[in-house]
Structure formats: structure tokens, C-alpha cells
Image (cartoon, rainbow, N blue to C red):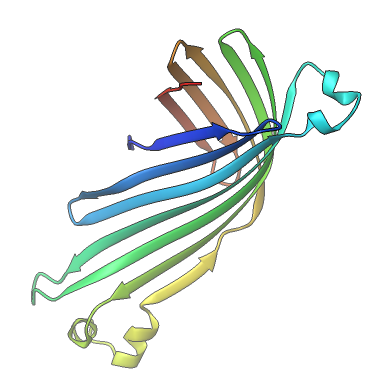
Length: 188
């Protein structure tokens, strides 16, 4: 699903970069979704005396992302309404290897992901009665919280930079493989 997202990084001292990502709340057909995240990357080869002469970059990266969605539910028979909320919080840690040649940068990484998801429904007692189940049973079914399989993952990708235009592609090998493609503006 193509979704606009602002992602920006600020370089600091000692080859450290702070990253932020933000997607404003988007609403379509009774569903609204928003996202924000923060991260940090740091070049670790600079701290190892002889190893820093290796012709690749090796960095540590950590990040946190939160995705929030609200879905309006409506019973067509009674016009009763309820709001379902889905919140996903994810944390990642990665070791990244990269090599830049002119405008082309190839990279690979190995990392660890952890995610926690909460699904809840907020409504009044009338909505519970529509389902035909006892009120206490329905209230117990209105909030679920679960953690993902915390797992290792690997990814490969590239970035091609022409002036301020950056084209990137990434493939992640994990329990749920993911492919991403992006176009962005990068100013240094």
C-alpha cells in the first residue's frame, strides 16, 4: 500500500545519526492510521584500532516505531457504533554492513525484532447486547494484547543517489518476509 511518510536523519559527532519517521494520521472509509518512530545509528569500526581500515562500514542501529489505527464499527440493524483500536509497538536492533561506490550503496544486515500488539474495542453496553452474549463475556473479549515471536532477521538492499533524489530497495528475510521500495529526497 503506497503511503507517504516523512523520514529524516541528523548527523551528530563521531559518526552517529538520529533518525525520525512520521506518517500523519490518514483517514479513509472509517479507518484512520498514524505512525511515528525514532532511531539511532552509530559507526562502530571507528572504535577498533586496526579494523577501521576495512573498506566497508559497520554500524549498530536501534529503533522504536509505533503504529496506531482506529476503525469505526457500526451495526447496520441498530446504528450502534463502536471504535476498535489497534496499536503496534516494535523495537529493532541491527548490525549493518555497507559499501558505497560513487552514487550506489549496497548493504546487508542482521538484526533482532520485538513487537507488541494491542487490539481493543470501546463502546457502550448496548453494543455488547447486540452480540447476544452475556455482558461480562463480551467485555472480556474487547481487549487483546500479544507479543510477536521475537526473532532474528536479515536484510539486503541498495540505495542509488542522483543529486538529491534517492531510490532504495530492501528485502527482509524473516518469519514474514518483506520487500520495500522507496523514492526520497536526501539533502546533506
